[in-house]
Length: 463
Image (cartoon, rainbow, N blue to C red; front, side, top):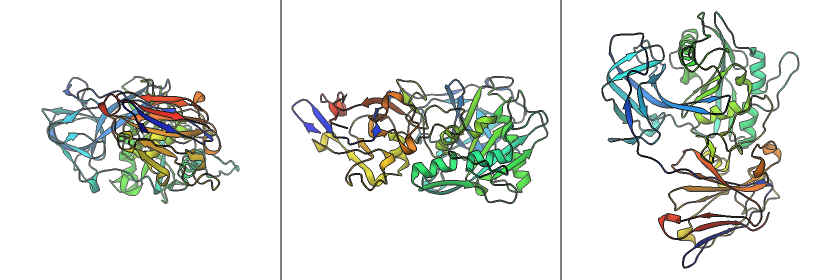
């Protein structure tokens, strides 16, 4: 980075085996909170107090659009029949809503208290204005991105439908465990995270006598076809608590993956073309039948549990296909890839090869980049970075090398193969946007850097 009279110039040399991309994020709009009590029908008439934790839920659809909404996770120790349920709310928080007392609400860390609420199986109508509070750090659900995590995979048998996959199918496609026929699986939740993190974060089957190889079949006895997957989810979780004799499933398992039978929808009798559902900083993920065996859907939804948000491009959700927080694919062995550059910084798996640059302070910076596929390559330059973070602007920018080989050999961002990518992020841990894919000699300009008249220029000198 070189500070001239009217320009900050970034010249970065990348020796890469990878593809590069650039990301931008739109500026935030003022937030709002709206009480829409006509949004839901209810099954109860009595009002009660409600205490719960706010969680941001995201649903993927097969046509690659998504829907996000806030839900209320009722504490497992509550004396309410809704304990442990996830309840959709009649309150609409937009993405940038700021509470006058606590500021920004955070999934898994913000609590809600309502003096009056009417509950159904999967919904809560709040009367009046709720009170929000922030949990202390040690009591919030911000999951570590290192260590080992236990996973319970749940098959569902209902009176009118069952999960298509067998327990053996799911043990093979989620954990890579061989079945009685000798079938194995090379790319799945367990192998994907192990390979991408270089064994810093691993996932394995829950060690519990109630299931086989981490998979348990729950029988709920009621009909599910035409019902909302949210209400079916709460029935399934209640039955698991009864079967296991423990109200706190998250105390038993780090993650619970529920493989829903085909036929459930996003609303009563509504759309059934949803593919998967995950909670930011949560422990539950849902999959529409065979989507439970898709490694990209598994890593996407568990990625939400780990706090990851979406990977976008040109203002469209999921359009950044350089990592698993973009599109998911109904395929059982592909695509073999990891996460994009911005998510890699957030996950911290390669943090000893992170570099931070502030053009306003550092002037000229020049260096080398390697792809995350070469993180442990002893032949790579010792001083080379896997991720460069450019800060000092209203957006943070993350520069990486998208090498299409090894654990990234099936990267789906076709025009970013073996290029330098640039992603932007507006708020820490927020959605990322792919804004540039640079080959040798290409540049990307960040105008009005830091709110001034200068520009920061990222230049790839050679690959």
